[in-house]
Length: 290
Image (cartoon, rainbow, N blue to C red):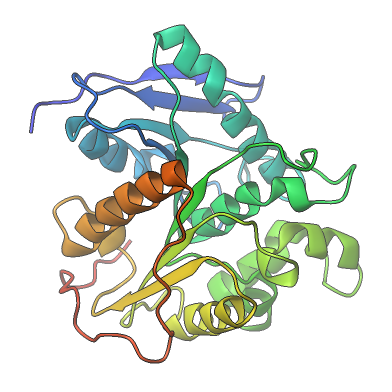
């Protein structure tokens, strides 16, 4: 594959973490625009550097990528609602960045890893938020046209009950679901209707950071409710999904192009019953410590 050009930095606010990187291919081969939302349990220790190898790989494949940074908690001035407002503003800034670069817009598909999967799915449903809620858009407005969740923490309430990441969800919200019910309802995609955009969920059975049971639970309920979900489970860990060259990352790229093409045609993804999945569809590399 040809090498990708260096990204163009776009600032969407005054805070040091309010920026995104536009990665442009030498030759654009696909209409889809990938919106990369990195993970790290919403904490300051993990930033946009996690998304750069992914953006570079996509650009080398002829895909435009928007690598989004946002305020995180634990020293980064983030949390609710700041983190959510940044993700919304960062996505809203994409159109102007593409226009400035002379690039035609296309289906915008969020690629979100771990906590980034939660934020990407939340962003796709901004038009479903109550008026006045942080990041809300008017009904019918556009944010994302689809989401590829890479081991996403899509159920914020369940993550809190399981105390994932030393209760990173509770730390993000700064309150309990009981004392801040309205905020939790607005922040948790699993607590309300899902957006009417395709969602592909990729999750490894050996994931030690976000247990596969969380993904199965979310997928089961979403499919029962008639949501546009394609759940794909594989033999792998949490990090192959963000490691270019790993089969799990290749599956992410495949899903990105599938969802992008389907979104452009208004098609629904194929729905797989979450408890009758093909086994061993991917062979990820051994777990890495990060």
